[in-house]
Image (tube, one colour):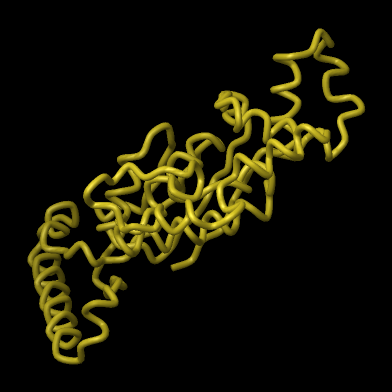
Length: 241
């Protein structure tokens, strides 16, 4: 799997902080960002998180390109809103040489791996036969397995990305999309370290778990770790600031 940030809001941390400052300041648009130092940017973003005032986060957007993602996971992606998507078309692109994703649970067993690959080879042969018989690609694709790798570009604002990380980085999320979320977060933190400083599953980001009886139990460990949850250290620094 390959992940690349294609485009993003210039100075995303500062953009969000300036938007938030406008909410609390009588300054005009021309000078609302004047004199805002990095320390104030950090403080402003942390204050927004603590108060649950996340609408300013929507002013920073990030567009990410992904290659080598199975159709299983790309179908999960498009269920997330608010977002924009552009995916490689199986209708217009010849799939006879398709690549595929093998789940670790199958790849680790030689017998299962061989059966899996044989099934994919049979699917490819049937696809090729249908195309050779004059069946349109848009119909021949019906025999393609969900393991077929695809490419997709998606755009979200920072708030939407944070909500997506909460769902897709949970230990109960499907393994491939969880791996994708880990990789995307690593990339976005390089560009906006303050916006994504507190990001991840709700147990890490909020100090709570939504899974109820299905919880993995990590929340119990986190609540026992001194300083692991965001509220205490952030409020201390806010008071000092």
